[in-house]
Length: 397
Image (cartoon, rainbow, N blue to C red; front, side, top):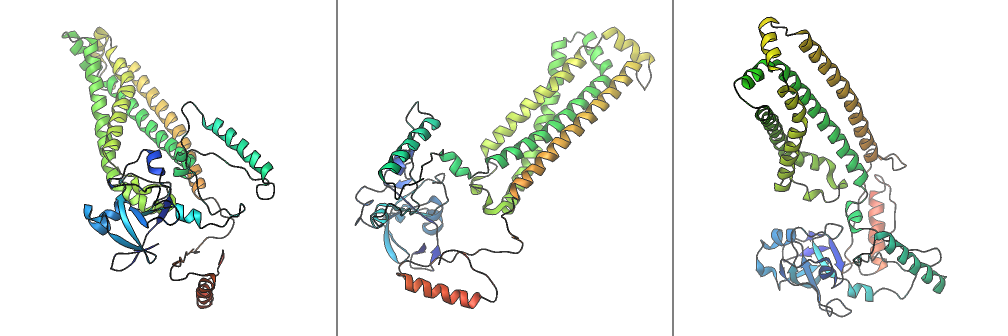
């Protein structure tokens, strides 16, 4: 819709909803109130609720926005509330309007489906499969009662979360698996380096134990080194993410649902810290225990006579570690590459035609200024005539 506040009009996204939606979802306006039943009916007052973003952008985030009248497609509406910044009703919207007047204006035709989407909450103890079965039964009874309009027409129940993510769940899980594979490669590499480093520190650990340090204390010391290394790596990764996320979001554009809510915040930092702590402990335990199991007498004796190259056992252990590390890394690298390739294919599914250099444009016409089909058709005809040498048109007129 075109929003006007006495200045230049702005194109905003609008969504209609019934008066009970916010209360059912457990959402309260940040300021103001929700729609009343009288407003959500035919002949009700023209009111609107603003999104938090539009409230901040056009009203400066001041409570004085309540009660102000705005023009939406030339129709005056009174602002009665502002929604929280976190609220999202499936699609991003700037303005919310009552749906009652729209429903009352629809023709009394069962075959007419204007795209109204019902929202419900499952009863406690009822599964989504049970809800699907019950709704399918209702659809079957409607088909028998209205065979002309409801023939082969059924209804589906979908979780609101699945509607929100719009089918990208599979692609994101594949990407998550690829990232987890890369993380596993890094952890195995670091664990291998810690094992190799532990072999070179056998004499140092033996001296500590000979001087009275317990093996448990040695394990804790080595584990602390591993955790510190892991946390430092996580901090560097978090720094890269803070600068890289905006760039990645600019690349994906509107193809990722709720992309505007993706940010490196306190929750991401806490998750990164927890993951770094867990990986530091898990992949540091084996090198720490292996190093602490050193034979004190053998380590002190072989250190004095084996020279720089170390004992035969040390050289063989190092060679084995290198071989295992390379083998595991190659396997995980191949798996990660295959997962990334699968993700790329999921993101580049062919639409069935050559989409190279093709653009799509939506030209909305004000329902107030162009109030009938003849006026709208005349405008579209003029546009097609002027753009005919450059573009091809498709879709409803």
